[in-house]
Structure formats: structure tokens, C-alpha cells
Length: 94
Length: 141
View 1 (tube, rainbow over the protein chains, first blue to last red):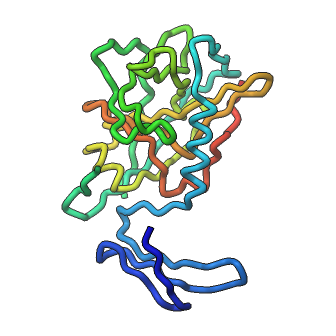
View 2 (cartoon, chains in turn purple, red):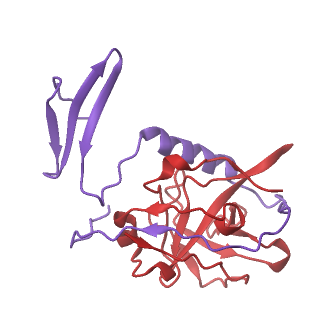
View 3 (cartoon, each protein chain N blue to C red):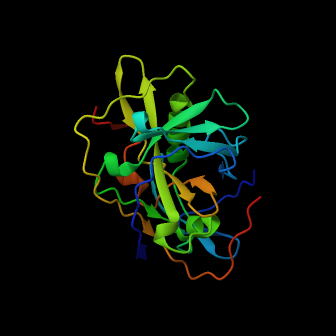
């Protein structure tokens, strides 16, 4: 892991396009300002950990029984929003 | 930003050759990349996302239309590109259900699985607006 020392108001740049700035220091809390292209997802680590734990708990074996939903809905449509990014090149995945 | 219409998945058994590829794996199951989506009429609206190489391991999933009618996960353009979605109608969204003994089942709205209907490439995405959704949303049972 690369470890850098930064002072309040200083930044680091990742990949020439993502800037992480130390915006505020409040006791043990460091406030970060993140400037990234819209297509770069930025989430707290806890979100990944939470979903990972949930997946592990949800893993079911052959014996699992399917529950019954109460009052079957008339299934109104759900609309996920898709962001249409302007970046021309998809990022390479390892 | 574009709005996608989520079409309810057809209730049918997906045959063995319709393998759903999850190149990144599910979170915590990164090494498992091939699944099959199984739907049986008597289990509707639930479906099983079953591992191909470990056929006794599976996840119960449900289309979010049965859980939260106004569910609108905001899928990042990064994920849209990764999945090769050219339009909203390409996307099939399912959410993982957690069954627990003596406790009501819940559904994970924070990390939906988005499947490209055409290529069958899928990813468990974290929507931009994930903070608005519960990882343990109660199922109406």
C-alpha cells in the first residue's frame, strides 16, 4: 500500500483524473473531497462489506424453501436509471 | 441520464446453455463466475441463481417489482458499459433474498444484480444512490 502524508487542503491525484483532497479535520474524522469523472463509482468500503456479508448469509443450499409473498402485487414497472457516460473508452477490467 | 423500463422476467426455466456470466463474481464469491437462472411457476415470483460448478449452492432472487414498486437504482455509466447495455430494455434486474430460520426473509436492494438479457453478462452493482436502499429490506410475506 502506498502511504502519503498530506496536510489540510492538500490533494492527491489518481490516474490523472481523480482528485482526493483533505477538506477538513475534526478530531478523528478526516473529510475527503473526491473529484472524479461521473462514470467512476465512489463508495464507502462499508457498502461493499455489507453486501458481501449479506451475500454470504443469503447463500442457500438445496433444502431451502421458497417463501410465499403476501398480496401478490400487480407488479408495477420498476425503472432503474442508466447513466450514459461520455467517456469514449471503456475501462479495462483485470 | 436515461431511464430504463424494467421488464418483469418471464417465468420459465432457463436451459443449461443459458449460462449467466458474472465476470467479477458476486461480492464475497468473486471466484464463482458462472450461474444459471432457474424459474419455476410454483415458486414465482422467486427464482434461483444457481452456481454451475457447485449445483447445490444457490441464491434466491426476486425481481424488485414485487418488493418496492418505485425502486430506481441509479446504475453508473461504468457499469452500463461493463454490461454492454445499449438500452434500458437490455437490463434484467434481480435482487438477492436472504432466508433466515425463525426470522422474516429480507431482500438486498443495495446491491442489485443487473443482467444483460442479450449477452447474459451480469454484475452485482452498487447503484450511485445505494445509500437510499436497505441491504435487508423486509419482504412482504
